[in-house]
Image (cartoon, rainbow, N blue to C red; front, top):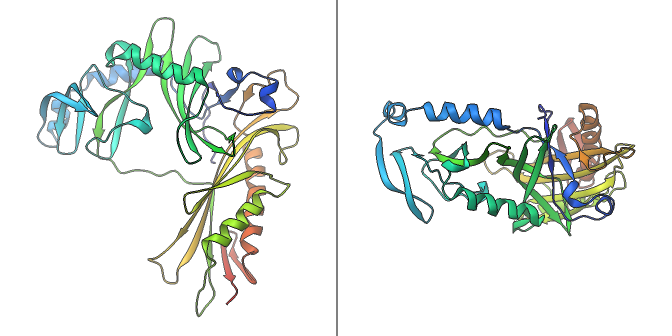
Length: 356
């Protein structure tokens, strides 16, 4: 969790929980997002997009072919320009939720705000997405990882926003919304939908996690602890009273822990919704091998004594530092418990002697 510029709108998250939900209806829970668009920025973006001539722009990089009909998944009713490294659709544009988007040429899906009239079956798309939002239920779950449509409201309530987020559902507890993609902007004059305008080949820039520990064995064997005891110690660490998170194994090398709508054991005077993810990675290309333990955290907070208990905000830099410091301490203790002898080469690098 890194500090980022916060947008001017909040998101209303529909999720199943207990304590706070008894006080405030689920339809009134609001979450501040780290980024977002409004109708003004959508208008500027779309105007800039429509001025671009794909034949001229792409023709500089190779042959361009106009294809009609052009497919999007099972639908064969579109028009598009095709090159050897991507595709560019013409209106009416296709659209899909990010995790439901069919395979396209290239490795990056291009999305753009478009008026509902410029989106294929726009009114039906809008109704489907809003119905998912009204249901308030996580959907398309794969293990504990689900998706959730959330509603956002601008500060002056002149516009309404919807986004689809990823949430972790651990033993019926839904964690903090993550990786949110805004998909709808509603104003009195216009409805904007996030359309798919094509695909291309790009080099990805991967966001940094909160922190990563590396664990090395000692010579001459350089033996490392196996994954099972590592995950068990990390689960015990999540149960520590200082963080008290409910955790569950996801896939072979990932652990997810949640807490929802509770008084924070780390930040006095605040409630919290939090998801912590731990990913294990073993090197096969390094000599000697080492174990990587990466921790990522998503946190929302809300004052205990407030007249707006439905408003959830991102932590301040000081709160973020304090929270991550406590997570670090618990993870560090868990890793040390695996060793009969430890030596921290630096704050994030452990030399661990395990039982022969």
